[in-house]
Amino acid sequence: MLRGRHKHLIVAIVVIVLALQPVIFATIPGGTEAQPSFIVKKGTKLGSIASALKDERYISSKYLFLICSLLLYNGKVVAGEYEIKKDMSILGIAKKMADGDRKVYTLKIVEGYNIFTVSQVIEKSEIMEGQAFLDLVRNADFLKRLAIPSDSLEGYLAPDSYFFSKETDVDEFLERIVQRTFKFFEKEDIKKRMEELQMTMFQVLTLASIIEKETKLEEEKRLVSAVFHNRLRKGMSLDADPTVIYGVGSFNRDLKRADLIAETPYNTYRLRGLPKGPICNPSPSSVTAALFPQESEALYFVSKNDGSHVFSRTMEEHNRYVTKYQKHKNRKP
Image (spheres, rainbow, N blue to C red):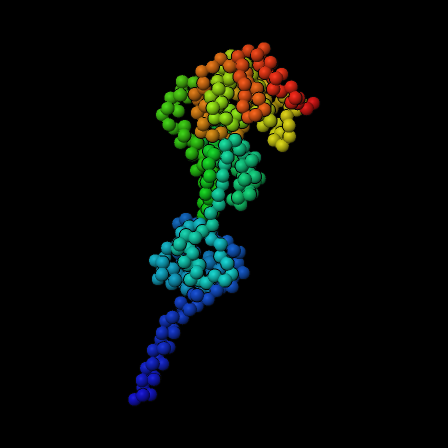
């Protein structure tokens, strides 16, 4: 009789071990030699995810992954990029994906950054290579899809901090950033003001980008805007150094006298009116300043070398201030 009980006990133990075997195996590290990054795209079915994990040698059994995911997490997998270490078990991977413990990249576009600066930031953030970014933001088909009347996204990349996960394609990510700019211009007061000034969104962004580069002082932006509006109204050239710098690409050196006569579509010393397009991505306050200039008859301004500017109505007055503040800052030949 005792032997019978032993037999039943042994059978019970065997049954329990067999039942727990999948769980036991699921907790054993896989020792994968696969790449440490696995991307789950939105809408991918659980079975396809399990198969891909097995094919790419992240797990030893797709069925064990399915069992763990379905029984413990109701089959939940959050789309995203997952860092999977060699010592992770199937159970650990299933939990990581159910919790949405994914890798997220941060892109910070600062007011005044141009597309070349953004390309450096986006590469440093490991979202994509800088040159690939420049190729994309200047791609004619991509620009046409976004209804951008320009040869690049310059001016349309709304300054802010953005979070990117690789289940989303980069072009969709950039499109969302551009839509932020479009949304700003959909405000009724903005649309009404553009109609009053007879300016397009592209023209406003162009002027705003120059204002952004001319002054960092919020209290000066509307006055700088007034100078440019006054000059545009009188048919004068804008004579804005930042546009010259953009045209010749002299981002890492001082402006030279020769640059002022360079034939580029951004040289506002040679051209009348606005340059070819934006020279950076302006802040909302610079866009607002472009639309709502301060009441002023000023036509000139010059830096006081402390971040601020002094404004003048006449050339004579302007020349006096230039002599006062810029006599020790001669441009290189």
